[in-house]
Image 1 (cartoon, rainbow, N blue to C red):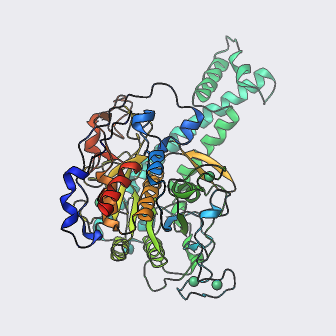
Image 2 (image 1 turned 90 degrees about the vertical axis):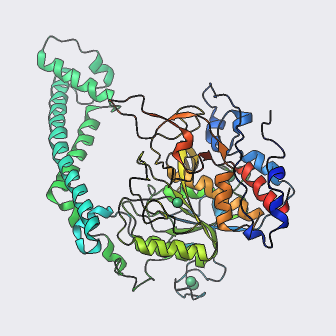
Image 3 (image 1 turned 120 degrees about the horizontal axis):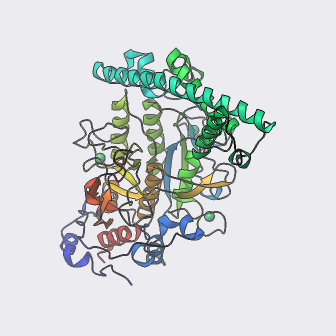
Length: 545
Ligand SMILES: [Ca+2]
Ligand SMILES: [Ca+2]
Ligand SMILES: [Ca+2]
Ligand SMILES: [Ca+2]
């Protein structure tokens, strides 16, 4: 059954074409209020369905994916141009079997000769640039502000200090709580080991213990509690609890702040005096640095090559810009990373990262405006705090006051699940009627990980590249459309969802069911990205049909 009206746009918007001189000035058609009628998928998804659910179709599969198969059927016989997508992220393993054929190669640069052949300031930048050099770990931004109050204005400093005090209080509580648990588990482990006369006892051994000894009874109860947390042994419980106690101690002693990560780069992150630092190593630094590789696979993993998975977009080249460490990214690296991607040909940039403080926000805003001036679309993850970002600040964002946008080339995306019911929005997704533009698949998304791996990750980090892939597809087949038009096509052509849903972040022990809100209240468009509808709208705008 096909519930989409075939003449969806043409009847209402035909007048637009005659009056416009250039395609890039055509207004984007208004959203349709048409509702897809679909039933909730009752059965658990099959393996195949769950590995590509974000590509499926609500009407035909009862899975609220982006209708990608229908989109490709629509594109059959049409020709696209190549589109470069900049992935500003952690390192990306472009040698991965399912990414190597979609790696952007800087044709004007000769690799590894120590010469900046294309004279863009970056030596040997063959697949992109690594603004982090050998850095993997980093501080969070509030920690950097506490370390050096001169980098923030007074109000931000006050906020960061209050946040730091909260963290210190939490660390005090954690040190006491986890310390007690550690003592309890250690005692339990000792008495169970003694009773069973072995240290490598199993969960079953513990469950079989029958005793009238009060101390041993308590030990068994403690062990059961740990198994209940999903831990497999008391040895593992001791390890995990020791880590938590250690983290709290580091926080309380101030040692967390004393660490120094940045100096190896040799630049000053608080001035723009030096813009050329880092190196050409755009890959992952350790195998766990998987984020950029996963994001890149969602956008553009080689399609239909009988390997791994299908990315959303075809005709795409992935430019890897390594700027996001394990910790908070620096505004300077973000701003220069965006500019690098723009200057080297990206038409879409994915920014799947975020933080709560942004001392050099103006640099990032200038970079967004620069991207706008070069007609580049930035697709941004809304963040994973289950928060209303019309109220809570999260960066990057395209606004100074959380109300007015500085430009029209920045699309912020919330994450949704495969459940077409009250659980549609991801419980962790940020939302906002003003500052989140649209939702897209971001729960249990299967994609590439370093060194030939594949895995399912969840996050708005996955929703942004799902959307960036559709953006790249539009820009490939309809290159005359501007970044701003593509942004509004993605919003206006999305599937309208008429569901009452659980407000992200509203469930708690006290409120297990959470608060109900109309899905339409969670974003500007109230919609979820739909590749087929988006391409139809783009086609209509360019070709009038
Ligand atoms: Ca160069
Ligand atoms: Ca070179
Ligand atoms: Ca593939
Ligand atoms: Ca915005």
